[in-house]
Length: 376
Image (tube, rainbow, N blue to C red; front, side):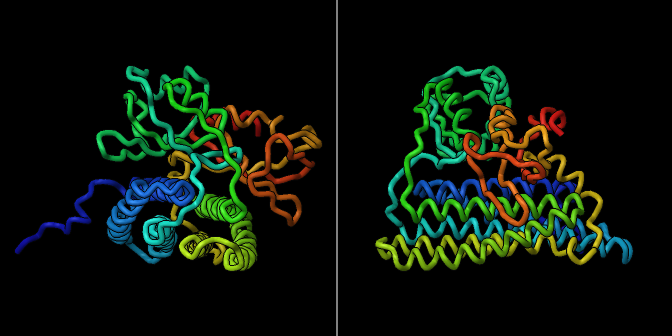
């Protein structure tokens, strides 16, 4: 008799390791899918589909390892949050794959551009010089924080390359960060700097849709991992925002002067974004139903690359601009501001005026932890 474990059980990673990998891979898949759709990069679209295939095995590994760890009814109840998370993340990654397919299948001809506007930007940079310091040293010398989402070298993509890697001429990077930080990085590696071009109305609106669902994913993960019903209710609010937004967006696309391929691609992408919204809502189901999440989830949150925090504006900053918080140079992004019942998604730093008791939804990288702690 063959007593060997199935291949999916032979992975030596713990459930916590697998969950952390799943969250990070989901985030990368979303970043690349959004950039792929907006930029028309078919090669990168195929890489998103590769991530989708990889994630399916990862989901099975999480199910198997969690099932082996269940010993009693209490363990089983806590495991629900892990299973729900794995299933929802898989649906998000599948929807990211559909965003890639909306480009590959319909081949829309949108005006080309290299990045999107906003305080956080995703852009492609081609390295024009050899012999750079290690990535970690380069970023430290430039005093910037950017996320290297992916690196293409020798005809293959490396997702989130090691901070010890040295760049070579011809390397292609997908960077995520503020426009200022990305351009500092580009100059340092002798690459073309990024100039944000105006988007036509339909592209601008699909970008806004992407921003909202991206925020929903981050909030849903935070609500589950911190067992916070207050944050979970924000996800519910944003789901209603998405539903209303989609109705208007779909009407606009259908009545627009876009070509048939462009219309089909836009609508397909909108449906994918709606599935991401629905999956985000599913992540928080255990919280809304008062089921206690598994205790390892908080540890997972603190070890992922991107993290989220919620801050309330005090009287010291009432009437000041977002830029006065000095977040951009620290790699901290204000995803949204909630004022009463109204949401401001990715508000402009130089123009948006803060008010006492505004709630800021902040995304930051692990390197920014110390600065953010001082601000709280």
